Length: 61
Image 1 (spheres, rainbow, N blue to C red):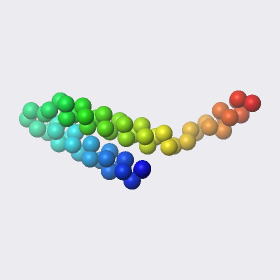
Image 2 (spheres, rainbow, N blue to C red; image 1 turned 120 degrees about the horizontal axis):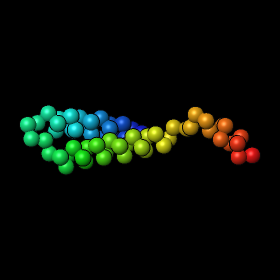
Image 3 (cartoon, helix red, strand yellow; image 1 turned 30 degrees about the vertical axis):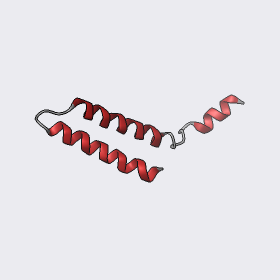
């Protein structure tokens, strides 16, 4: 999954920057690119374990 998300992030960044450089940027394309970027970042960050995961487990007991 990570192999798909990382290139998708770069494509959405490139698309947003390219669209912004136009004389009349399309707002809907910009919103779509930002939404795809945020979704991919959310999916990637969900796989990273919490820094305080051990502390949280100790507090429960």
